[in-house]
Image (tube, rainbow, N blue to C red; front, top):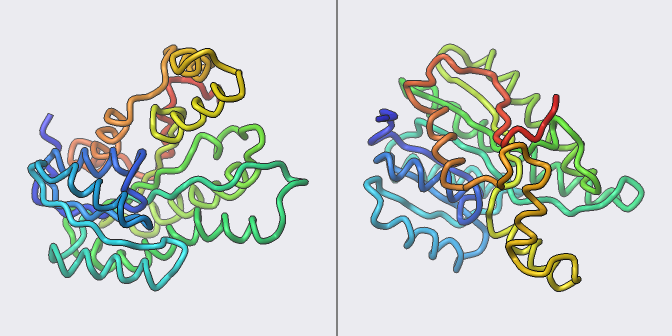
Length: 260
């Protein structure tokens, strides 16, 4: 299916690795111009190089999403490079694990900046440009934790829900010129899961990588963890013309694990 995003411009935050990178890759494969960002120069350069052969043009900008001025510079750089913005995909790194009793004020404020204010700052800066686009869209990558708490992840469980509130609100306030949706990923085979499985092997929880992967898949009705490439294509689809009547949804992409 031709998604019709060729020559559009997509800004994908936190996209030097993981699901953000998979999303940027999907847009670039469809011929969109893509801006990726991250905090680690080496990882960002590697991501840009990996996308160099894609049909769409890719530009990398170093940015710390917890710093408003960095976010504003990122948006300005996107417009300067490609002349506008048609699609914004917000993503962010994970926040520290822990229970309520283990989590201090500094961690709460840090998580709020990472998960919520990074979205607020990105959308605030990008909105004028999205409004000028005939196909303006926003897609927020969050987590299934917004629908069902995950053990020992109090910050993700509580704070990520604010992003859903933002998306649901702007989906009405900015319509009909801009559509806004959220995606709730479950377990996908990213570097993060690979690290967690490796740690489990070191602890003696798993005999090998496949055993760890099988354990992660055990609660998923489809009996496997997600493929980041497929996830990225799903996000690109939400920004496309075939999905032009989809607005204000919070879509789980988790193999059916959520029961609610």
